[in-house]
Structure formats: structure tokens, C-alpha cells
Amino acid sequence: MPSTVLDKADYQGGRKWGDVKKEQAKKIDTINQEIIESGNYKEYEDLEEKLTSYKEQFIEYDTDDSGDLDPTDVAYMLEKLGKNKNILEIKKMIAQVDLDGSGTINYHEYVQMMLGKKNSILRIILMFEEKSKEKPGPSGPPSVRKIEDLP
Ligand SMILES: [Ca+2]
Image (tube, rainbow, N blue to C red):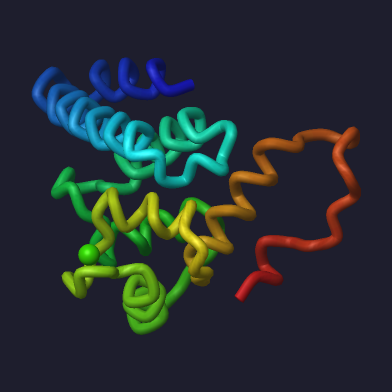
């Protein structure tokens, strides 16, 4: 429910805050378009759909709208996913996907983390979350794994 999230944010946080989020969404839309046109990740049939959901996640977790996920943002993200980690663990998780060594995760790094070949703890956690959303209810295969079991 992307648009309602933004609308609601707009409504609650006042105009300026909503504008910042919209501006960010626009920027990421451009990046997503470039990614699609680049032909990278073309093995993913639902690439556009995936990128849209990454955009929404990224904007949601970038709590200070800096354009990067810093350790505070990642802590917030993990907390929302029901996983509390200490700052050292979080810094280690970021380091696994921080390609430019900035200590934060920008959108390019986020996409690379989710779609690239390299595995990381953060990716496993996010993928797990994605899967649990995709297959709701008893029709899916029985799941014995719990989010608590993840590293
Ligand atoms: Ca970085």
C-alpha cells in the first residue's frame, strides 16, 4: 500500500515532511529506472515490482531522510522486524553491504544487497520478511523457521 503510506505520512507529519518523502521517492524512482534500463539483475522477472518494494522499505527506514541508512536507521529497521541487535552487531551487518565504506547503506548498496550474489545477515533477515509477506495464510508450505532462529 505505497501511496496510502505516503498520503498518511503527509497527513500526519504536515506538508513539509511529506514533501521530503515525496522528493526521496522521486529520486529513487529515477535510480530504479536506471537499474531497469541497465539490464543488471534482468534474471529477476519481477524486477520492477521488487525495486518498488525496496524503494518503499528504504524510504520508511531512512528515518532522518539523509538518503543513507545509518546504524540508527538499521536499528529501527531491525526493531520493526522484531530483531533487536546491539550497535556492534549492527555495524558489522552494515559493513557486509557497505560497498563504499561510508559506514551507511545508500540505495544502490541496498539494491545490491537484496539482488546481488553476495549474502549478508541483513539480506537474510529482509528476504525472510519478504517471503513471509508473500505467502500468508495456511495455503503456503508449512514454515518451521521463525524469525528468531535467524542469525
Ligand atoms: Ca555506503
